[in-house]
Image (cartoon, rainbow, N blue to C red; front, side, top):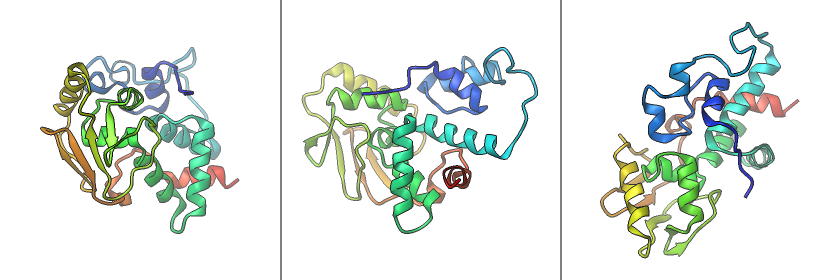
Length: 208
């Protein structure tokens, strides 16, 4: 599976915002954005020309990195969103938000999307009783997510540790942190997606 192996703290510094790529570390003083709130590189502290294209590009990169999606896959999501009825930008965020790895993070069953992908790839989760090991799997309303009964205690402990970092679960999801099960109640509304991006800028970039 192709994935971005670049330094995660540098990605946050490049976008100038916490993308929560490292889970618990992002909540401490060790966070790269907290320690060095300027872009990485030799010219990171220099003034940068703000153009319309640059703003659109940075917004796209921010969304792509937040969800841990590579460029080709991100464009595929955009094309799918543009074919759906409704607002393209909102459709795009909804597709990204309902990825299996992201849903585990929203439920509090993983501290980061990278950790969620690892747990999924190792076959620790089931959806509607069937093992799913595809991080990009799109969850649907009424899907029931559960930890595989045969998962080792080590994996269970990692998941329980992650639940302690969770303050709230979105209204479109329902989680049982004691039983490590959950249910997708419905698809999220735009107001319920707290991803720090302006999706209209992404639409403008791809519409050129």
